[in-house]
Length: 488
Ligand code: ADP
Image (cartoon, rainbow, N blue to C red):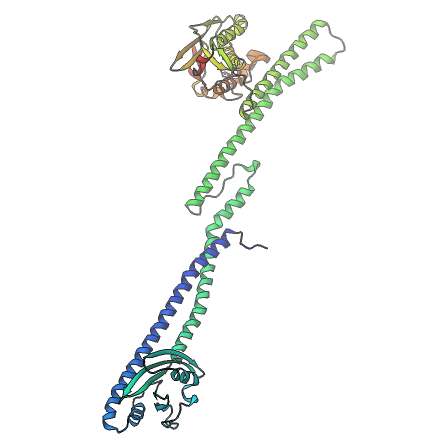
């Protein structure tokens, strides 16, 4: 059982009909009351005019007729108005003169008013009248409704009550017709307005239904579909907002999909190497130690690569989810830079590359020493990897405008302009085939710069490629120098 319609369409229709019905009924009532009042006023004026005419006529008649009573009856007989009856009572409340309702049925003067003529209710209302003041009442009698107006009349010291009764049957008929018209027209008007309102609401809300069914049909497999845009500014706005949301969802889904694809692709290579190497090694029952060693070394490389990729992915995933536990502590950035440079020295020597540490000043900072070390190692790794033989990797540090700047510069071939921003994307490599084949199983999976940038951001800083052309490539880390003075 529902007390209130749940559909917006029905509610709109209800309110529409109710808001129309209320003023309509109020207006109809007002019109009716004003009209009824006006009719009654006009009736009263008419009766008043008739009584004045009667009084004038009576005054004229009295001059020619002997007795007051005879003059009254004569006047009553002569002054005839449609639907108007005149009764004159004396102070003893006897009928002195009376309009003959029908010519063949006159009421002789001096008799009490016969009930059948003007009705007992009217008679009763006149009987109770003291004849000293005017009277105007509406009386419902068995013969119908009458307007009764009385005026005191004094002639030759005698008091009379001059009363006129006027049948309101015609007026009642008119009012009844009006009531009938209203009773039919108002519900009809409200009904047709409600029907119109219902269809209007249905039409206006049709785009919402279309959007609902389309939205319900959209899932991960057809995320490229969009809601229909139309149906008024508000709905267009809503559809656009939802479509924008779908755009973002789709691109995020696409990113996820690409990420999964790239990740599995990267993991597949070392996994395949591991499997192939074990298969080959185990295919013969006996091998000499040297062969086993060589094979295990290949497997070790593959396992290292696998571990590194999984570790990197894990770190990025935790950073994305905001679950990366950072061990923030006061530290000196120049020490981190020194340690990183020392850490890569052996690899650099192997490649005949020199790592030159420039002007490095004391730089107190608060952060995670391991993560910051990893950031620098990733940059130095790349710089050494892409340096020409006998080249130099310059590492410098400066403090300006309340921030630390650490730059790593190499004299390698540089990064093509269209890849300047993409190098920070996950799994992106400028020339994936070359870099992998050249550096073997230990080469990066294209995650190094993504991780480095993330670490800089986690410390409230940034990592940018500030310059890259053949012979000079510069990556710059910027970290805020705030709060650093507290540690020493
Ligand atoms: P990877 O671990 O594979 O090196 P990175 O995210 O560190 O991945 O780097 C992404 C790509 O950016 C590299 O594959 C390389 O093409 C390019 N790159 C990074 N550093 C340099 C550099 N110093 N000189 C030239 N190219 C670079």
